[in-house]
Length: 65
Image (tube, rainbow, N blue to C red; front, side, top):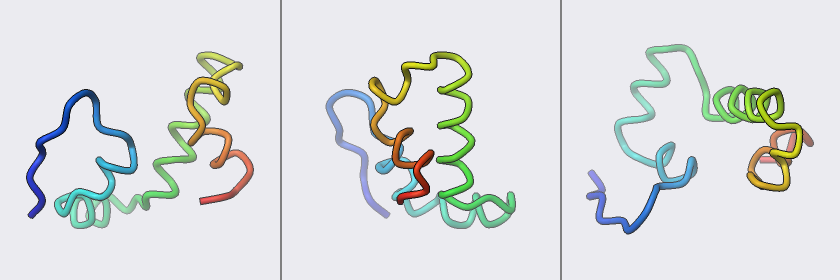
């Protein structure tokens, strides 16, 4: 298991890369791509300019991983 020694907030990539996330997401029936799409959609609804603030969101909308 990877230890968390980060300065600042972890990215979504960091969070999804944690060892515990695979079994948790598998048990929930959710994939990393599903979560990215859901978060991107929520960001877009909350702030239409979110793609400029959150580059991962624009990747999700374009269907690029």
